[in-house]
Image (tube, rainbow, N blue to C red; front, side, top):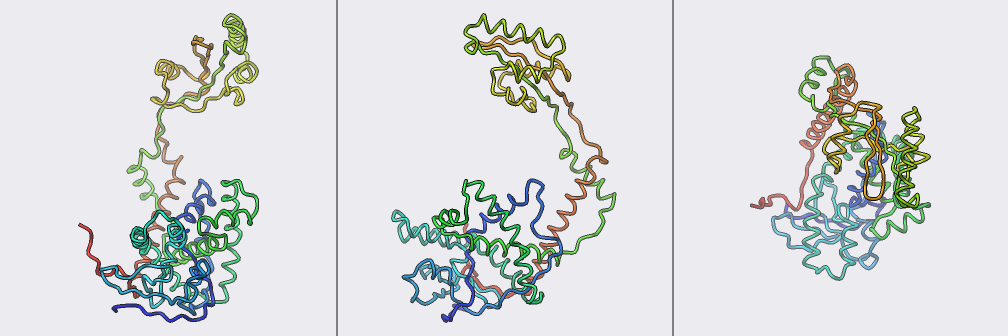
Length: 396
């Protein structure tokens, strides 16, 4: 096949701009939280998306009205780029369905085209490199979406879209919080400067979730992880469950300038030490008497590992102390300091019984990842994919 030829037809759906996919992947992680909880159920109920009724790249046309009457460009699938890449250039076909430049790098294209310092030649080099870097991933997504549309009843499409709206709103809330934005209108104004919009983010979010969710339904994993597997993983990854020796320390700092002179500061320090010797609570005294910012946290300085403190003498002393013991008073140029070890934990390896649940989760995640990859490989074997990079020689 030397070239793809597309004829403009009336569009029935707006195409998504996947240039925001890297951003959305990061946002999905943010919305999931530190525990890595997925926004896609292991066995979601999907429905077929509306069939493609047009080869028109509506997203590109809407962003650049002056090109509204220009036909979609089809490029020769050869090793030499002889055609200028525009938003409407077809760079691949998956089972007969086209992929446009703007599907991959729409927002980037708008940005570099608006920069007068970027020459047309350099612009083409950037577009070519970015399209090549992102095409494989997008092609895989298209293969999965196509399989999903064939396998899942169409009447479930609205159901899955509605179910994804709530987690998407969580993503938007995270974006607004990071950018200190209150309303959707404000966010759209900011995103517009990046060639994006809330609608484009939503389309990409739903797309990613459907791809991952459908692959999960195809991925077969064992319902139970046997004990020998748990033991084997534990023995091969002992370092993952080892904790280094560390101390949690507190401080009380008495600054000379806060008390008018060194002499007055010394009197305050002596009073603090006297109270500590009588059994006063270190944290309470830190809150009331310490001049350091840590006073707001009851003198707490957090956990300290060996090698992380600039003052090696102090660090060595802290690691010599047992839980509940204090240092002597350190005299600095402008302040007095005294420290206490609130907790001293020795290096240890957590026993298997303590981390068994964590290991089981890790094994399940790995098995599911492998199963998804196998499912994707099976779908890819039956798909027909043609790209502008077919037959391109690797760079030596």
